[in-house]
Amino acid sequence: DVQLAIRTKAGDESAFQRLFDKHYNWVYSKTYRMLSNHQDTEEVSLDIFMKVWQKIDKWDTNEGSFQAWLNVVAKNTIIDAIRKKERVRETLLSMEDETGVAPLSEYEDSKPTPDKIVESQEAQEILEQALQQVTKPNHRTAWMLRHLEGCSIAEISQLLQRKEGTVKIWIFRCTE
Image (cartoon, rainbow, N blue to C red; front, side, top):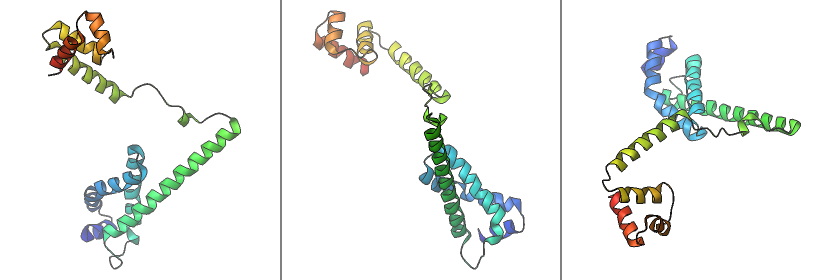
């Protein structure tokens, strides 16, 4: 670290890249523990390394290790980000008081995100494939009524005109 930091002080971008690669995961982890938001964490982590690049001249080899100095830069940058976020939130809240209208951030979008849509489609495909492997239609129907439609055993028993014990066995066999 010391040699890489000294080379970075001299303007060596490849040395800085190596420091970045070596310490990025640690900085990201530290930042995420404080912010609990991946998007903010990514932005602040990059800000930390931007400050490292800009202020590397302030690091003194006699005052401590590069890691210790990086820790101080990270801590201060994270605190600044939290303060900035609080100021923005306070501004939005004061705007809400003045206008009587909640800021856009208060309205939640009920539509699923693209990754949730893909995840749901994949789960649906897996479920359909599994249900196709159930060879007995009564078992499949009983399982679907119970787990997809939310029917009680008694309701399924009435619908299929079978005893409750039989319905329970069918559902159990379908899940094996």
